[in-house]
Amino acid sequence: MRSTERSTRKKLIGAVVALAFVAAACGSDAADNTSADAPTGTEAPAPTGTEAPVEAEPASTEAPADATPAEVEEPGVPERIISLSPTHTEIMFAIGAGELLVAVDDFSNFPAEALELPNELSGFEPNVEAIAAYEPDLVLIGGDFSGLGDQLAAIDIASWDGPAASTIDDTYAQIEQLGAATGNVAGAAELVLDMQTRLAAAIAAAPQAEASLSIYHELDPTFYSSDSTTFIGEIYTLLGLQNIADQAEGDNFGYPQLNAEFIVSANPDLIFLSDTKCCDQTIETVGARDGWDVIAAVQNGNVIEMDDDVASRWGPRVVDYVEAVSAAIQAAAIPA
Image (cartoon, rainbow, N blue to C red):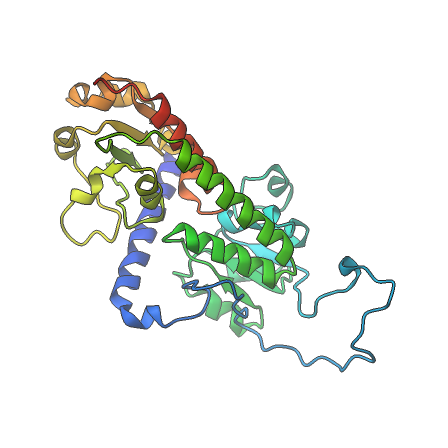
């Protein structure tokens, strides 16, 4: 089981790097794209793949006098949604749209309600026939690197693509877009406000040192990391930390593969492990690596085991990650 998770994680990291390469290659064309592939605001992009149905003109445009807002149905709201992204699954439940989901991908394990849904679909290697069997009217994709949107469009199934966020603002935009697309605008707005409030509090709580603490963020035991241009890297920057991955040379598109010698020489003050579930990495395994006993983070007990899922998803729990990093800074034992 661990070897399967490790192999899948390597594929996912490779996919993220490949997507970053494509985005960089697109240049200004990508910046002009106002679809869900590059969230630029809070307006929900129209799901692709089906033409908007021609609706019959209503007999009256006024809601009944005794109708409550919940009783007035919004036109065009999908009723059967499949999520092929654990991040979007989390968002759907967080904004109050979880009841619209009829199936999720095999990595959607949060919240607990997600596990009660059929969860055998693959977001990494999607099977169009398996997806169509659930008769969805909307499919949520977390980065369409396989051309799934076009395949679904060919059989008249709409899709919405929200790829991995580059910034926290991208996360807010995707939440608001899904809120609009599912008729949960208020729930999305409430979630974003709560996240912004907690984020500000976590940043304020982090101690401000005269000299920035340096960090190494580990994606897997082969030393893939994330620099400050990535979503997870932005979190460390917001908290005033210096990311050693920023020193990596070459075109790595935000996810450099470092080497042990470089990490040891960089001597980070803190090490954050986001490979504890997939790859069984712990404070002990890091301390046992050849030559790593001289690193400040290891010597001072500042190797922090993080939750892989929270660290790799850009949904509502990103604030949980910020709070965990903030707490780690406050608790860090840094000699004067």
